[in-house]
Length: 296
Ligand SMILES: [Zn+2]
Image (tube, rainbow, N blue to C red; front, side, top):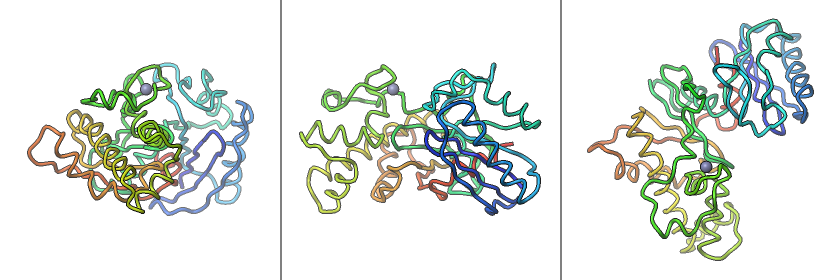
């Protein structure tokens, strides 16, 4: 049995899987917004599982942010009380075992690579298009973290081939740069571009509703979204050339994306034929916690 924990800003979720990936148990608690509180929440989930089901062979954990290769200190986490803390060392010591910790987008990618939409493929690029834009790389069902713990962070490359017009309808990125993909293809980026262009105040759901009602503005916005997504992914294809790209996060639930993304992507990648497929995730919101369990 393997335990996976997904530490989010508001919820901490645990899962216990058997060798075949079958879910045995699951538990969800509120994340306490302090370092000690977060740790005791994690311990309570592990204790709960092990009292019920016996000792697990491994414990893996996913969380936002990056885990420094050199110091194992946490950085870039939006659960800011974890930043700069020796999270892994402390958990290892308290639990007297080795805990595997990985960025949550990397956990998503691993989950989909092991037994999700990327199953059977060697090189999987996992994409999160939600409130932010993240990504991860899995090769032979192992996470590639990278020297700086930023592999797969494609959300902060500049939208390729950005036109003057596209520079107009976008906000500056929180990272300090202009033109990051995240500001175009995250959920908030999508609605903000739409609102700036059409002088409205819609959220993504309202734009999608408009699309289903065949409103011209929304059809334009969706088609442009797919074009931006494809341009971003073309960079990934030209460098990594993955077998499959698995989309996750709130925006990945838009079915229209899958009708067009493969053909659009083909236009931008440096190849005559594009074998790489862009597909929807299999495990949805569960992929983060399942991927955490698969770490080891
Ligand atoms: Zn940025």
